[in-house]
Length: 555
Image 1 (cartoon, one colour):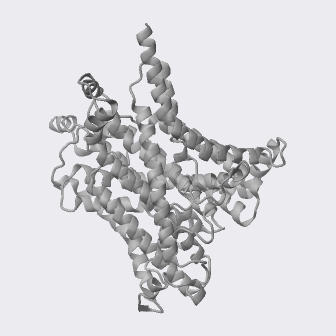
Image 2 (cartoon, one colour):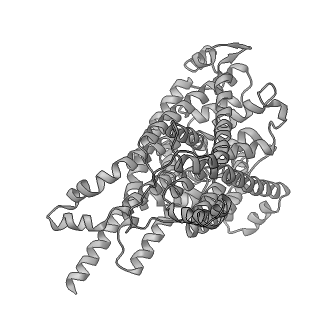
Image 3 (tube, one colour):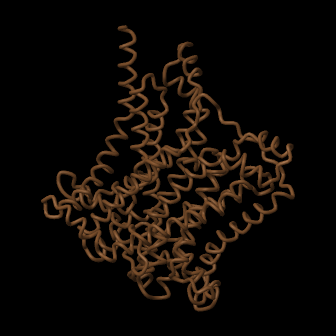
């Protein structure tokens, strides 16, 4: 009894030690700012006033903004799922030359800065653009297209990871019994994929509902979502009370969606290793999904190609002038909208992304270790589930809300951190943290606990067991998660737009400032900076794809 109690105490102490740092960071840099934002909404003058929230919610513009957010997110989710399913099948069940390259190409839009996505679609649809004849520039349809472009990769990766692990034998047996391809799909494949599809759709809806850069650049003030309305109320109108009220409503909505998503999300069985079925060559019956995948690839490539071409055109001629201007000193007349050269902003982005990456990987590794430890009691299992859900909260709470919360709570004593250079990377690390956790958790959960016990019985210390058992399985997903966190941090705009100092901007912030100022030089520099940023993130994701991390994107 004494030995059992001692073992339980030691296990709880180890769990508490592993969770201490992530909980402290989450408490100070996430829960406290969000609580400060909620307090600002409910107590605008230091006195509890729920009526202030109701007053904001009953404004006609608020109703239009909420409705616009709901229907665009719903439509964007539906289209992303419809287009993503065939691509998931082709890229995860079929074998053909260049499959890895196509996978990486379809993943790039998800890690592209949202501002860059907005610029690319604006360039494609604006007067004089390749698709100007469609008349979609600045319309809700263009916003939905941008949301689909950004999120189709989520469906491809999430559903594809499940699809490639499905046992082929039930479908083959149904076909042998005379079922047609659609009947096999409807009665065998679709039910097996349903949890993954629903989970992916719920995550895509969250991303669509909290999209910022895409809606802000394409829709401007005319078509605002809840996310962009919070930004406009804070940055342009200085109506912090209304912004806090909207943030509060958004917070409640995304928490409810996260709870539903957690219930629907499939989790890895820790007792079973994941088996990936060998892909096969395409057959005649795969023509439809192959064609749809080709169209999706073309639709993804078109905005990026328009961006590259636009950055190389100056006064109707081919030129590198926009790229040369990136390094020009604003004092010399190059890029008057800025305080620093764009090359300095690129260095700021790289430094910030490196800091955000090591922070998110360190925290993600600790969180993954905590939530995948084998539970010995129901109470312990519930605590681990609670911690898992707690560290997923940043996935659903918008970056704009997070940045706004930083301004409200961390810019005054006792936490006077407003000018701390680590504030921006901390915010970006919190945005990337759920992605790192969801990448590492399935991998750690699949490690057979008996191997660790065998190593311990042979006299290996915990550190030695970690190096011998866990590290060989973990290092590739760990590097992949670091690459993903780096790419996401590099393009983060929502929180950074609130927190970056004017003399230390990141590239997404610089792009948005250049777009907000008139002049062909400013616009050309914005396009050139977008191409540089897109190329950097694409390079990172190609390196990640080379690692072939199967769990990446399986949220």
